[in-house]
Each structure stands twice: as C-alpha cells, then as structure tokens.
Length: 165
Image 1 (tube, rainbow, N blue to C red):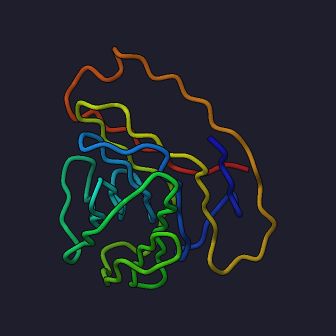
Image 2 (cartoon, rainbow, N blue to C red; image 1 turned 90 degrees about the vertical axis):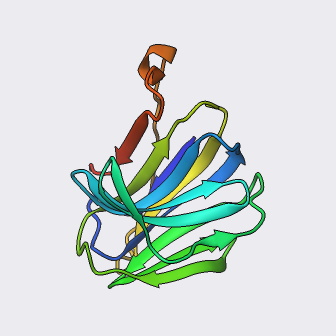
Image 3 (tube, one colour; image 1 turned 45 degrees about the vertical axis):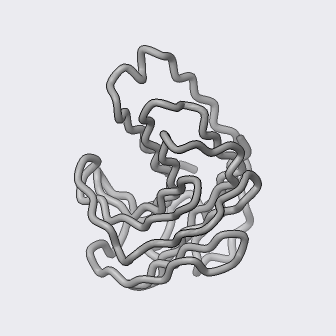
C-alpha cells in the first residue's frame, strides 16, 4: 500500500482517499475525516453503494443523508472531503454525496475498516491532505500484520488515524 500525506498535523478541513483493489459484500472499508478519539465521519464502500456515517464511537453510527447507489469497481478512487460543515464523497472525481453535519469541528484523516466474514476486500494508495496547506507531499509505507486471531470476533474494527512527523 502506498501512503501519501501532505501534512503531519491536519487542519479541520482535509480529505482522505483510497483506491478500491478488491471489494466484497462482507467487509466495510471506509475513508474517515475528523477522527478524534473514537468519533469520526466515514464513507463506507460496498459493492453497489457508498454510505456516509457519523460515528459517535466505534460501535455507534448514524447515517448522514441517503447515500449513493451505483457501481463500485476495482480501481475506483473514493475520496471523503470535509470543509466547514460540508462533507463530500467523490468516486473517480465525480460527486456522489454532499451533506452537512456540524457534529465535529476538528480531527485527523484516516481509514476505518470493519471486517465481517469475507476478509477479501482490499484497498490501496491511501492519501490524505489538508485543504488549506500547500506543503509538499510526504510519502511513506504502512506495514501491518493481522492474524486470524486478531479477527476472531465478528465485526472486528480497525481504525488507522494519521499523525506523525
């Protein structure tokens, strides 16, 4: 996975995106913005839909708007942008969802991934950038090892929050 970050600390207005490599009906990959503690906004991707959620903690979520129904294919770039109270989800640069929510005013971009049974959904080329920063991109690699023992409980959730230098 290639990871591109345009800032080490992000302003309240930023985006997160990834490329869909393989998708199934059992896993829920999502790009997240304004992550702080256990709360965030997340755009979940499944075959045939994208849903925008407000997570008040990792177990409690509420839909924001009606979502998008349409084809999701390998190679699609899914981006969630937050600017002020406006949340925008794009697929390959085409706006699919635009909603407003004023629940969270700050936080960091990242990934939100929930496994159900499939464990075959894959994402690639994660990137995040600050909307008001013109700083140069920083490129790095994230390596993770997840064993079957890590995914024992149905609905195992892993959240990656981006911070650093």
